[in-house]
Image (cartoon, rainbow, N blue to C red):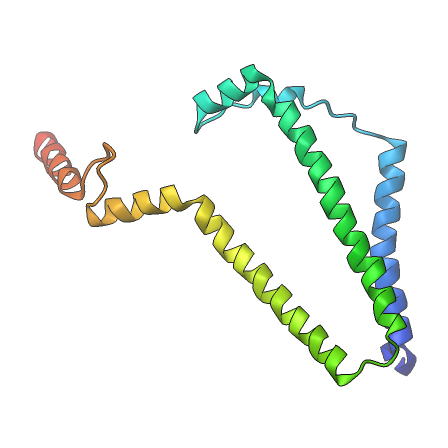
Length: 166
């Protein structure tokens, strides 16, 4: 059992784990394809933004936008993945033994990548939900003037309903 803790068996196990899932997925997808046409998605009831959704469906922008997004993902996602998986490691191998400067650059690049990813993961959802967040905060502090009940109105309505029922 002492040999299983070495680098080679660990690498082989990880490669088999990752590679087998890709092979299994590919084989089953080729044997029994789903051929989903997205027509059933038109039957899903939309709760928020119904008018905007219906307007985009009538324009036929839905499938066009999906095709454009697919092309963007294929171009940039696959291109970047190939660069990170193939090109960059080959360039690192050509460098041979890392000098202190090259290693420092690699650590700096890793830190920038990590902080950038963390910033995107934290900030983008907050930015996308800024209207909901400001609405909630505005309602909590009584600043909201968008037709929503103010906290004082909510209290008076609940008092009225209590006195009417009692």
